[in-house]
Image (tube, rainbow, N blue to C red; front, side):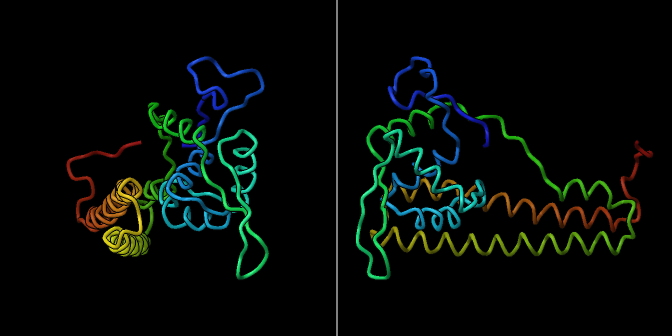
Length: 215
């Protein structure tokens, strides 16, 4: 997810990038995807990402505005200053046609190979060496955490369906969110099932029955 993808965002051709044109980061594509759904301010973008992309691409708030500035510089987004009833004027960004083409060209490329790091699984390597009750307690805590996230995603899904039925979101935006939400739900459900299976394995009188000690 954090690999850079080479793309000539200025010429939108298959030619190699010009010297000094740089490489776009995945964050910038996330921003373009959010703006393709509808124009947003930087603040609105961070709120959208917290809700819709945090389960597969976590972003720090402070990273959004520099990325918007790069995208504006390269002509991929354009700002509009709009009045606000609650304070100073705001910059609301929309994706340009160049930005849309850049995003869809990138989406059509094979993704970079995912590199997984899961601290919980590193800890699981140590559970057989711990008192059984301590290991089971840690697994129960982890199961509860993923159960909570699973319930939260279920709430998001119901809200999304209501918004779509009410005509508040395009079919494309609805379907894109459903695809990512379905994946997030599957991951959380799988983790709950793993926690339950791991607890059964640890509680079994014969751990790793039929297997000898391993290094």
